Length: 272
Image (cartoon, rainbow, N blue to C red; front, side):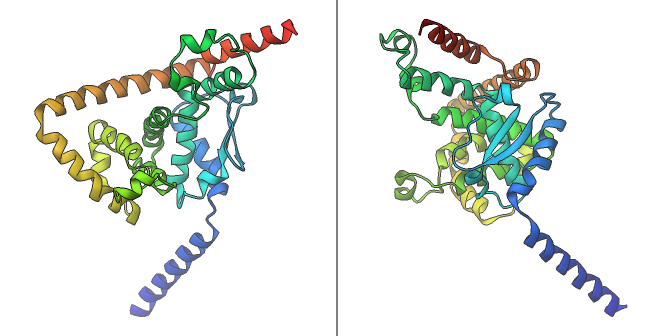
């Protein structure tokens, strides 16, 4: 009987090793991505493509292809973290960041804004050519909502974010990379999905993050005034992200930013 038992254990050990050796992040993008779409009842007929460099999804409404950066996938060590990469990218689309980026490029790079008419009407954050910290945070929170509905561990997004290169300030403060950004997601999860936080995520990166995050949360919860403000902010965040997803499901990504961009480019083309 013991021989049979040890033989079964040996077979299981070999099976795990084979699976680990054959698991490749980019090969998991389509099946994981399809599960995210299906479970979230997103009817847009999207396909997935792994690309080199920065993923440009500015034409996703037309192409129906969600590009996932190979660079981002290098920080994914399992299906949960692949789901994080996909959900974050889809989060940017759902929150209209991709169309805002097109407008940025149009205003900054093509001379459309030579008289500063548009720049004067919008804030300085918008005219930056880079994705802002706020936009990344919005995409992250949207992403964890998608992950939870699809059956993935949302704490994997925190790990995936902290695996990316960080800032000098993170190093000086001896904190995990991108700690402030990851804390936005962690705070949201502690309020909206405390059971997910309690369940945890078994990896060294998350344990290191938690060592820094838990004291922050304990300090916050001890201050009644700050806690009340925190709860109000988190509820607002839930409402905003749910509204964005609901709009996306209805319009398939078509939004005011994209419509305005198309109108401006068509107008400019006709004037030449």
